[in-house]
Length: 236
Image 1 (spheres, one colour):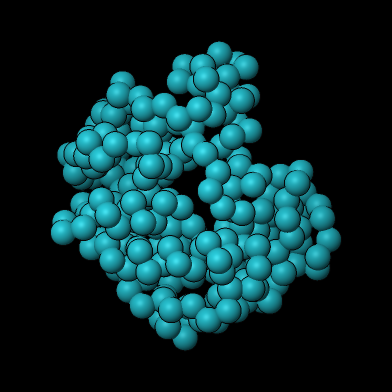
Image 2: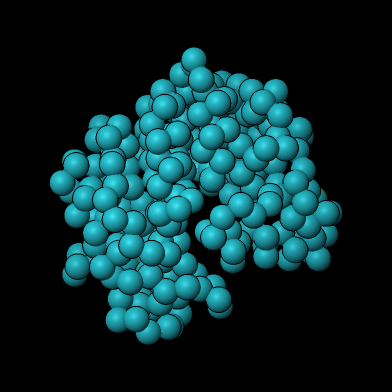
């Protein structure tokens, strides 16, 4: 499930170019959905802060699918409230992904993330994506993960020290940019060599053969197999 205590964002790197959340926010605004009255403009929604507490069944929550929790305009005091709920809702698992890796590291400087919080950064290219990994490494967390999606170019050599999980995927949507098989295969091989769990999520709007088609027809096999690995000792 998703939990969006904030909505809206601003673009900071090439991975943001065809933002799914931006398009969806405008649709929700047109539908009159509460919280999206201003479309993709950043909003802090205090009334949603305790939503996960009402769900008693252990659940995996993706936090802020429609925003970035570490956006520079979200005060640390508000982020404190989000993590207070995460600590209280100890029976759930919360996955938090950001492109603002510097703010992530600054927020957790000198403190440990809740045991049930998985923290990750987006890595779409070499210039913007790879430097985020060093910031993530600074955070004391049970699970640190990389979302290499959309993978926009060959990443080259990746230092996966203290990284537990890597997710790779191509871009979806009508304007999707293609992902080459060798880019994804290189990441998978480096995960194998460095003993890091690897999950291949999707090809997206372009197949392994370099042809555009609906993503459901492209499947999610890489090198002829499905990669669904999870971090060691973690069961969802």
